[in-house]
Image 1: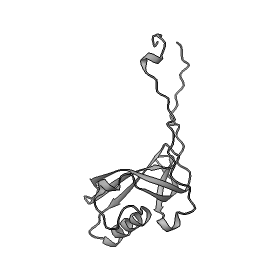
Image 2: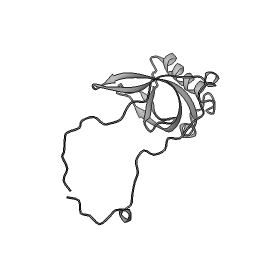
Image 3: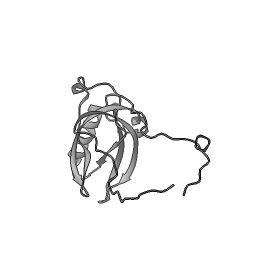
Image 4: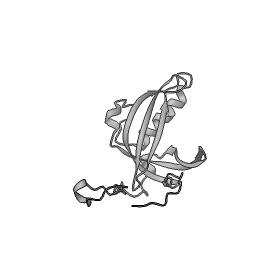
Length: 149
């Protein structure tokens, strides 16, 4: 096999479009921020998209109002997470909604969560839709016996 290689630096992924989207919590991990504060890293799947969004809630003892505002937005959006519930393992799989905006990051446009949308304002959004895998995998038995050159 011969290949006419040309350098391609683009990752080929388009950011999630700006606007309102249903999201599902894929994982929540405890972490420590650069400034040494406890924080949560939340990985979210986006309805009908294969890309993910990440959201960070930093617990700031110097600004508890901001931390509480971030948690309130999350609880209001994900109606199946009871307000005040800190059992982060129980958050996984819950569906809410957010507003996505685009920002430049390292020279590329990147999708970011602008804010979470409260459950009472999600009625006009379509229900959650799984995105089919965009990649096809095959096993060795499915490929012909041709050496890679």
